[in-house]
Length: 246
Length: 250
Ligand SMILES: Nc1ncnc2c1ncn2[C@@H]1O[C@H](COP(=O)(O)OP(=O)(O)OP(=O)(O)O)[C@@H](O)[C@H]1O
Ligand SMILES: [Mg+2]
Image 1 (cartoon, rainbow over the protein chains, first blue to last red):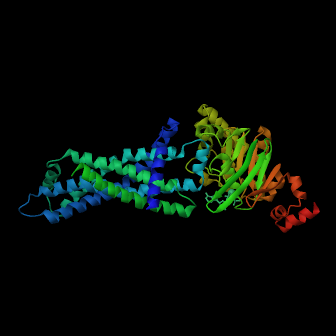
Image 2: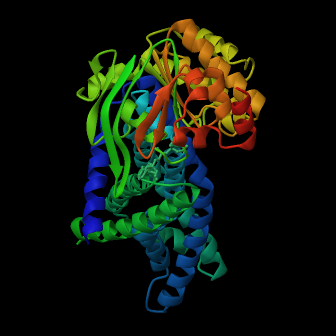
Image 3: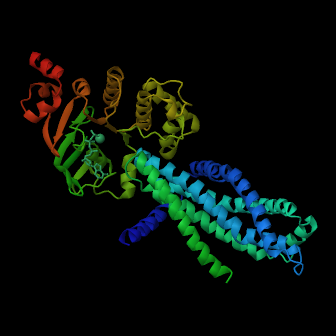
């Protein structure tokens, strides 16, 4: 309990150092571009693959549950669309990214810590927390929503492929995708995503930044980063859903 | 000149430094020697502010570093070059980017001037044409030399080196020692070198502090060291049979 409180305190102290104006704008933007590539673009492949299969599976399961002479067939497309937009794309992708980006961020910052690169930055008068972490946060908050929108699109495409395999007509499926579309659901999903992006990058950076020891501890930090950012993401998923939808 | 006065430092139960006072002179290579774990790195990190001491004062030419606020410390650090025990090169940056980094961070110069300075520093450590290599593509000795180049990029008045030649072959080690000494004399820098390598002590030790049991156990020049009758110092310096024999001849 005591360590949890101390961790949380230390986390917010770190955030205070992260959020200051970067001293050299050009260096900051260079870092930002690098991070968008590392955190965002490099996650594109895994997001596409997962979304494709996820969409197909959701559709097949919806079909199993909803195929019934009394229910219109377009419900399957509708169910696929809403479950992807509301939950599967934002949360599932966030958890996958917590694994991929979280471990990457924590091990990168952690190894910089144990090889004294962070000390070297500090004595050059660089605010290392700001220099290393802020570009990651901004890159993720900017790019994760893009990934989630892509995931929604690919997921629906995967859903269509799935619907073919279970003999739902394309026309029915498409009708369902378009049926009573509620734009707020997308707003809700993207709001969640931006919060998740912040959680994943900051929690992982925190575990990386306070790594002590050597290569072994870097591994430990990166595991902790994944576990804790996933847990915090799930907690905030609950809180945000309650606030925004209920 | 860097002065430390009555520095104390402990980690948990472990009293690492006790009442350490010393004057590190400018234009000289000042050596801190002592066994592994005796607190050399700790002292260096206290001097540059990476660790906080329990008590004591660090002064850079009469400027009290310990009492400075964050901004003042930051300004002073522009005058300090530090070579870390492991090199601490930024591993996602090329050699050139590593050395140019402090320049773009601090110096208000044009890109060309900075590049010129990078090449000058690389030349100084005999590493021309390595600009675009990554640290992972360098040998241990090359890494150390790039780290020296980065440390001297901003023309420091103070140069702190944590075991600049550990893990290197004797020839490269001496090369780096000599390089540090040359730079020190050429620009009249206050240089501090942590070492437990006896070759370096004999080669460049203008002024030596021997740390033992957390205290400055002995201080003097390399000539004085050869004739000292301090038991612990002798046990440390002349640990090998070869050195014992050499000493008898001396
Ligand atoms: N960050 C730290 N936290 C806790 N203890 C530390 C820390 N850094 C150093 N120590 C302890 O302080 C003592 C001195 O360590 P230091 O690194 O200064 O030794 P050293 O003289 O540089 O050794 P070496 O020659 O092996 O580099 C050691 O007992 C070490 O365990
Ligand atoms: Mg050391």
